[in-house]
Image 1: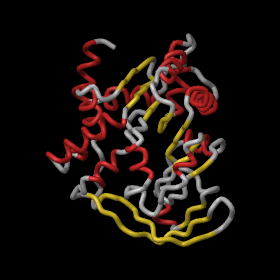
Image 2: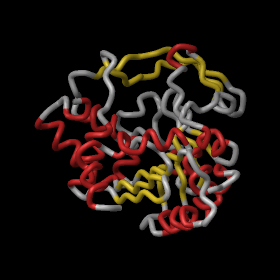
Image 3: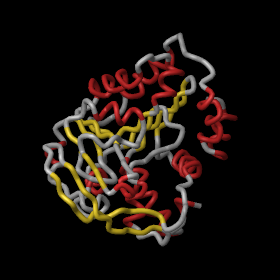
Length: 271
């Protein structure tokens, strides 16, 4: 990366610079450089457990991988003991029904591909995760009526310092960003109870009051600014090779940083 590109990233954020290129998919890599860089990046992550967000289009077109979901799942399984993939379903707030086995993830194509090979999906109607690995035995003990509350999945990820890995995503995705908002009780968010019908994997059905975390108005997290701030404070390891953006974001780095910034300015994450 040139110094000019670096300072442009600091000023404007990776998404603004690369988004147009990413959406156009102007070329297919044939020299193997991007594919090797992707593999090297994953294999150099210093942990055996990750929360993974994967954008398949970047990987398919810029690394020249015909079946990127299969490739990434195999790459993850060779490297990591535990793989956690978000399979969020915000539409359940409207439908009032969540079928653990059959409700598709709304977190992208990779998450649905991973669901097919995962050993477990958490029974959270709004913020479910697909999981592969022995960590399932611990996660099964959590409560899922309020994912952000004590003994919930986000507290578990944070306490165990499980990092976020973003591969091929145009936006930065630290998994506990909304947990930071919840923890600091930001003034623009709310928690409401929703009565949801849950169909479990074994076919049993239950109706429960589930807490849903959302914004009071149509706010959005300012991911460009957040990425710039994390880069400036050396809180995420990042590479862009042949159009593929790769990020490793340690939980014990960015999360206390967010809490400190929100303490100073409750609107920090959305400004």
